[in-house]
Image (tube, rainbow, N blue to C red; front, side):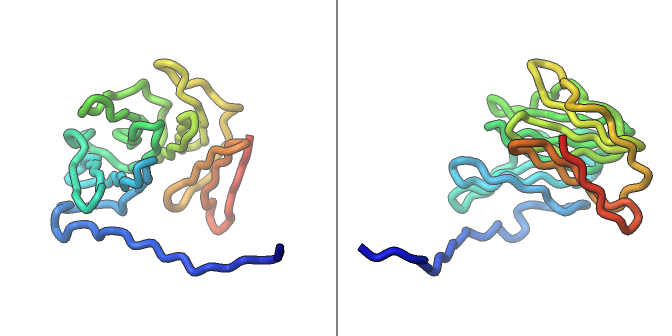
Length: 178
C-alpha cells in the first residue's frame, strides 16, 4: 500500500447566467449557493432588492422586489434564502418561504448590513457595528457593539466556531471576533 500526497486536476463547469435575463443592476450582486447547487443572487435595481435563482440552466426571480429605497444588499441561506438591506437607516431582513418574502424583525439601524449562516446572524454597521442572531421572531445581541470610526466599502461577516466582522477604516483593516 502506497502512501503520500495525491494530486488531481478538478474542473467545475457552471451553466452561464442568461444574457439580458437579469435586468438592470445598480449594485454588484451578493450570492450564495444552496445544497442543490443553485446560485441565489440579490442585487439592487430601481432602488429595490431583486433576488433570483439560477438552477440547472434556468434563471427564476424569487418573489417580488423588496424595499423602496434599498441599499447594501446581503444574502445568506438558513436553509431558505434570507436577504438583508438598508432603507432610510433601518436594516431589513426577509426570508423566502412558500414562494414569497416574509419580512422579519429589524436587526437594528445603520448604513450597511451583512448576513451569515448558521444562525442566521446579522451585523449592522453605522457609527457602531452590532451583531445579533435570529432567535424566534427577534434578534438576540452577540456581545456588545463595537465603535466604527469610519468605513469604506461593504463590511464582512463570517460565522463558524466564532463570529467575526471586518471592515476598512481609513486605510486600516479592522477585524473583530466574539
